[in-house]
Length: 414
Image 1 (spheres, helix red, strand yellow):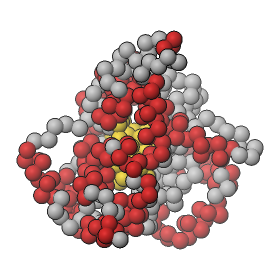
Image 2 (cartoon, helix red, strand yellow):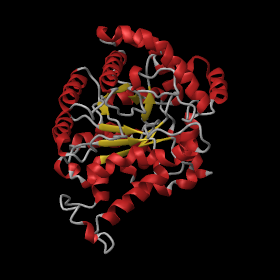
Image 3 (cartoon, helix red, strand yellow):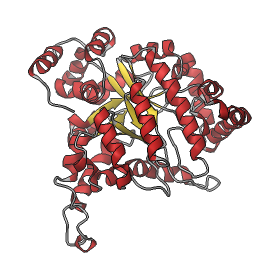
Image 4 (cartoon, one colour):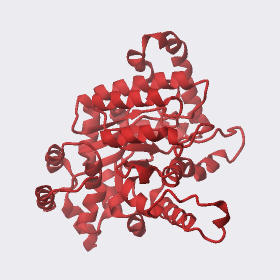
């Protein structure tokens, strides 16, 4: 994010000859069992919470059935035992991280199909509604306060994000961002799906971008949110699977063409779990084409006038892609099309679609045979560059539990 000094560069060069890699997962999920969020809610919401917590739990169970994954999840939970309790149990979580070879991880909230999502819809699939704004803020604050406590228990390994329902109230957004920074959280998670609210190119958000830049807090968007689908009709889940990356990436176009990255050159923005290996090379190409004033778009006006660089150049400087379970060795070209400096490895723990409990094997399958420096960048060094972490402490952990470099070299020899 900032220029390196000579001594720091030399230190990192020495670390490259260590036996193990430093791994920082860009995609972890954490949260309490629903009923335990009550302890973190403002008391004025307790009565409503008590009346609704059982209903929310039942609704999540029903949502699993609608997704046609109840059987899959039941088998998955039985297979992994108490590992899923690492969503809120720090001792179990650290045991899982050690087994995965992960020194630290970025922590998002969970979603509706999980059993530890924040209350009142303040989850990974946050969908904005005027009638739900106050309660989403209440649920977000409850989660953020728990997350701050969870991270304090192990500040080196946990990179907690604050849930910010930023679309409703700019002043409230700024207040919560400042609280998050003061309480040790390392970034913010904003809703990707904006619905009927202003997209992030709107100038009213500029004071928010300025604050995030000044506080050096990366901005995050994660897949999951989308418009409502008619779940009674066939094909809706296939439609969602084809569209979710679009809704998650939509803020990128607003930030880029809205001149946000031009105005705030040090604002770091992470887009996590969007099929990065095939999606983002195409997105960068598309943005560059649309910004080149071709004959077919010239009549639309000078919509790129507030940019001094190509969109792909802003992308390289301001954007990081959190790839949850990178593709296998046959797709390594995509790493270089995106740019290895822009890729962050992610395990997606504790989700069944992630790499756990086979993370080490997946790392080797995805990255084995690539240049050693590139592997280390994607596994951890890129993340260290953008988060406020104690790099020495993380390398000390990696020295004990990180994946051995020799295993990746063996893959190269094969």
